[in-house]
Amino acid sequence: MNVNKFILPAASTNVNMAIVMKRITDPDALLLQGAADATRLAILRQLSRADAEVCACDFTSCCDVAQPTVSHHLKVLREAGWVTSERRGSWVYYRLRDEAVLRFRTLAGEIGGFGAAEARPRGRVITVVHPEGR
Image (cartoon, rainbow, N blue to C red; front, side):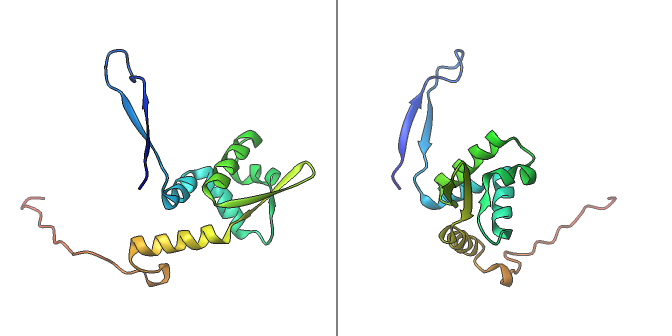
């Protein structure tokens, strides 16, 4: 994995340590990171239930945030590869990318070792014995 590092100034004047930040370049990590926010999940859910594109102006009701905040989250989702957008006049319409949804399903299956419909318990069962008097 290719990782770019940036050295930032010390976080505190009392601590003389540099903070190393890594730029994420793994497309799967970027996809998951893009969805890792309650507002962005609400946007993704609304898009997944829509029959067609959704206007950016329609996300304020599902997310309970102001339009500039919605625009920020839509930008993050677009950069992460979750959505595509199309400008029509002064409005921008969004749609889920099929490739992103398919990749997310594949990742979830790889992590769980099975598809969502085949969910089964994994691992060992451990019996917990409590001491007398409890």
